[in-house]
Image 1: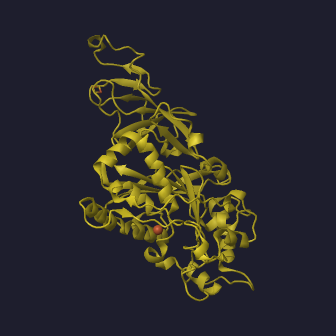
Image 2: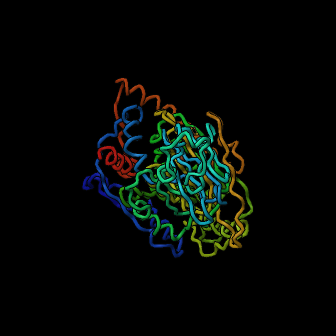
Image 3: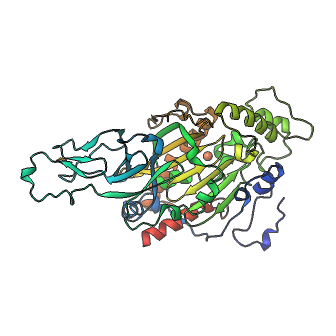
Length: 461
Ligand code: FES
Ligand SMILES: [Fe+2]
């Protein structure tokens, strides 16, 4: 229990008067990686964040010119392009990048534009397989490695040389089973961009996972507002009140590891400090099991450890992997890393989620939100085929997504249900109505502030 005297605390030092996440994890009595129980918080100021950032076309244009072309971002999972000739088109705002496997162990990315009159070589957001890239307009053709293959009526283009008419390349790197691109030819290495991630995820290698579900939906709010709806557990009390008995919220842990990486840990199987009076372990167990019986809590035991033990053996069998050494926290908790600018990576086994938030074309008011469920590849190495992307229409419920956990689907409906109302108020403010900025919690909303500070750095560069 944190005992605090609020009078003596500096901004950012106050914490929820409940057990800390670190204590809760250590209380499980399991050995856990040092990274999991590391705490790293820094007060970063408390100025309001201007709403204008979510509505201004000028601000959006600045992001398009100074952020997206400079940032490392993941284009697709490697498993989407397993064979030579497989390609995936990654779009961000006005930019379109053609990512392709040119050799069994080599991936390249090109500007997705013909060197004749500019046409996209492959359509936006498409995935497929080709022997070469042939422009659909007049048939100029490039080999997979970007070298010029053929120009119909080449006699008419004496100025075209093979050397100068290679497809312009975009930087590519691989980590965690993702293909990353960076449009800036002077960009530093991905390794550096990832800060603590390679070290932390060495415990939870994402390259050993496959895409069991991929769902995409366009949401009615700016990409940052949409992303920020997932940055904190502060909203659980109001938005997901069904979770109060089975997940801690106000005592979740928030870490900032660098300019581009942050984390929250939100423990499962432990009730919210908001609940008044003690909650019995039986009650927690019953709620965690959705009212389903059939499990008992031994004398002195906890619902958290009973459910963890059950999941450890059930998932070991279902996934064909050995989870006997996996602690309750690593198995079940929501351990979520943010990587600037627009990705969340969860390390857990039960909640193996990846989120990505992209501006929807040139629309400042909407976002393409991707959710991936990454399950472990069985130890026999036979990864099931990656799931195809399931597209939800605007307004369509996440509960209609095949393969997505029903409880999680409800949570996504709740999270995304607030966005339109938030964006509309931002728009009113942009015409002068009411308050002009958001006021963030010093601790629980630190990841939002961290993201904005890094964004400012890019836009001011
Ligand atoms: S625009 Fe591509 S071949 Fe003409
Ligand atoms: Fe949420």
